[in-house]
Image (cartoon, rainbow, N blue to C red; front, side, top):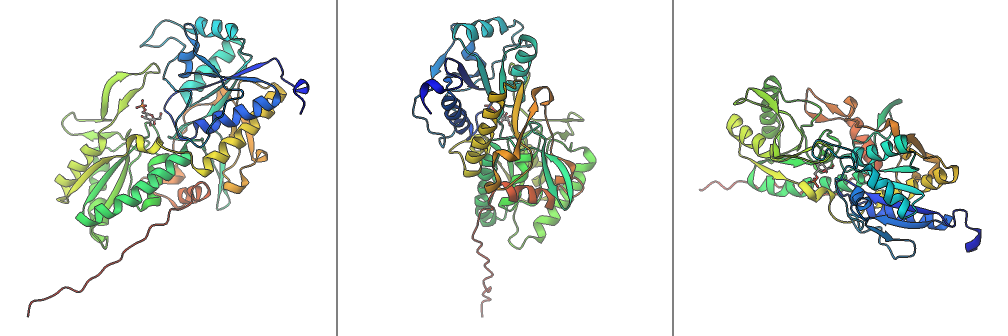
Length: 411
Ligand code: F6P
């Protein structure tokens, strides 16, 4: 294509990433940058999310720069800055954002984020008419994408956000590796997994051999705890190696006898600019209660940032490229206030633009794990969720050492 034939020559598109990082953000940035610059846009990067559009602005030129989309995290940096007034920051910073969009002559803004970042983008589009395109991102996988999953002839509304496939693989592998230490000590390991409001990521531990699990969607009342302890004991005792890994979401609501109420465990009471406190520590509470109630040794392990750290995995790489292809379509049609999504759950080779669509950013919001994926009576993830994961992940291969040595009796 000759330079002067470029469609959007003289226009500028800026990309920002906000909220928690994921291994797929650089891949999203690179994929959008490559396609937008081919269309003729000058492509800028806004540093540290919405923060980079405050004050003097913090903008870099990405148009012709080398970029490594396999490298995890975000080279633009991130923040939980909210341009709209919040409890933590009552003053509106929207005028600063508008001023910088004007000063840097930004024509289109692509916001890579979850509910918070894209929620703010949506408001800017609706209230100020800023041309925005949202780009989904979260390891928690709880941002509504209206992605349909077909299982045994039934259609379920699922979610698939870039970042989740890489994090899912990390959690599945982590769980599979924890198995050898649990086996060696015949212990129960309670594995805490990120997920404030939804158990999508926690469920991926079943790929690593976890049997039972707890998710934020199902509160652990006094009665449910009784049932759970019984099942834990039964499952542990029936395990040939007498061990068990129990993944639990950081946002699980657990009945606290001392306080006589259901509560989450907070790592800090401080809230961010979107009103979220930080969770952390539920695994320790559950492990010590399991030990006390069942008499079986239980330990806690927090997987924390491990889930979202490190390189982009293959599925995410292609997913971000495919969604960036849809961004091109939106740009060409000048359809703003939209977010590209996968229209159905497909395996790696079917990640193609014809399997994408876009949703109105007015419809974004949180989407919990569907009931079909979790059996609340048995505290187990279901075959339907296993089917979903089979499309997105490659089941890691673990070697199993099934020892059964003959016991020596002294003569
Ligand atoms: O938003 C995604 C997430 O991974 C949540 O599950 C978690 O509570 C949060 O990020 C923590 O992120 P940070 O410690 O960076 O604020």
